[in-house]
Length: 361
Figure 1: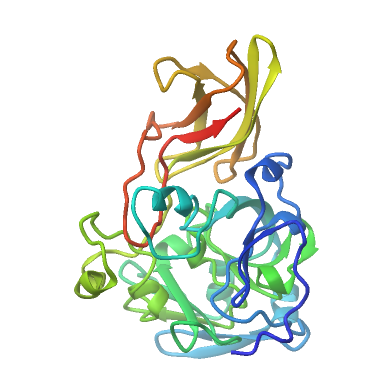
Figure 2 (figure 1 turned 120 degrees about the vertical axis):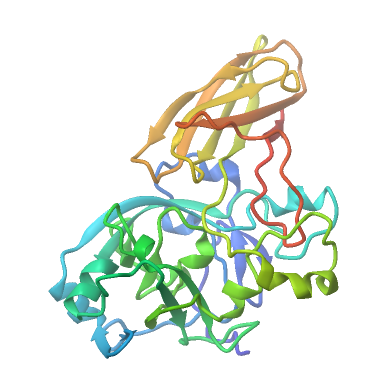
């Protein structure tokens, strides 16, 4: 693979891999921004990053009985622009922590592979309806997203899919996004067009999307069928995993989570703590609590930012504590009453880790 012509990358990221380029900011930097600035949005790639001309970029749409093709300029002119604030997170968030339990396979991510942005684009539902590609009964169908635009490590292209009914839900459903925080998408983040699938892990948010297909089955791509799945904790090797990939479902939503970005002694009698929390499948975060005594007692923090049901939450607060040094833990609670667990469950791919957040001061 040729990595010689990649665009320049942000200098605010900690590089976890150079070819392909994978990098993340620190959690301490992230929690200073309700909406994540371009330079602090993580980069997750499975191949080289290329730059494309938006004026000549086209997307192929393949239905069950007809095909169509649209340019980005035509998409912009035909359909109403919508915006949605949604958190994007990599399935491998906090993989390093899971790797402390026992070895895992994957990029050694810390807690910075998450970004909360305002995405601008058009609803997939609107496009499919305009092209007469949306069946009356979509109960058992899937929408497959693919990018043949650049080479990929484990397959001939990058592909993924989600159920069509979920993708075309109007609350908000999938967005074909060409903007992030009011600016055109950069190549690093999937420009000129990417999938934004609120409520789904980042693996479904296909960058540089150029082919969208309606199918009776999930995407056959490696990243849908042989990756981003949670195998049982007794599966400890790639060899043992081989016969099991097809028996376990592809991941959808990531779990309720919280991370401490900053913790320091703010006075002789207190500690200041600030972090972020992420909603899971059962609803938005309703509260965040911290403990300085290993979970014996909990103190509720102030949620200082939350924008709709799909964003992350920024939280902060003071905890009474006279010790000069120590540990602090965090846990999130969602609107359904679900509480973030003390321990995240280990799995071979190191995905979906959501044990209590922890930091030292």
